[in-house]
Length: 140
Length: 140
Image 1 (tube, rainbow over the protein chains, first blue to last red):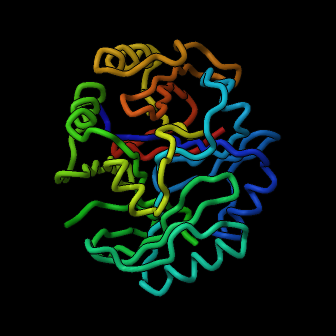
Image 2 (image 1 turned 180 degrees about the horizontal axis):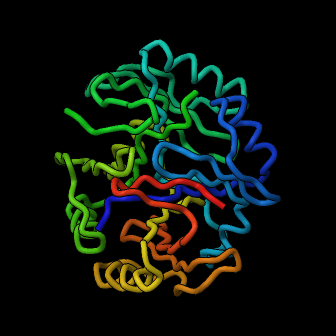
């Protein structure tokens, strides 16, 4: 079966705040939006930000904690961009979880959480190629 | 800034169980693994399954709930494949959260959770194209 994930959906509590955060923090714009969801065209898949109440209704799971043991990494092309993006995120309303530093496996990374509690890693990984469409390939 | 997520990392408690589950449920094989993480090459990004204790240490967040308000959708090419994949998932150790049915916005979908609590949507979406590399494009 294809090693494929078509959509990552994040539960959010305020769609306008979420859109504003991703716009200010990343410069990302939705490809579609209505009153309860925004979709972003990503690198080979779609990111959805959906009202948590609707996500809970659709999955039939009530009271999901906002943030679980999941992280989403945005990789940058240059080491110094890690701090630039973290600073933009924080000024857009994110909370710093870990100041950027160099992990033992190489590169550089820090962690922030967005206004809904989702954990983002901002990373520079000099080994994994990123093409012009943002497609990322594992390498070691 | 590129609308790009390079890595989705899921916290897991037992790497062998997780690998076995993804192998039996999806037929997915890691491109890399060591004692605490497995990486899967996906459609334009990398999926990591990492021991939750290591993920918590790296993010400096202790006691993350296993499952938050996040879902990952695997899209299938034919409507009848939704049930086939859900059945495979359940026989591989997943828990059914929502039996597949047709949502008002079209298509067909059901939800399961994997042995670590991460929520997977298995969906047939006849509108969004999937190319041979698994790259998915928003359309409406």
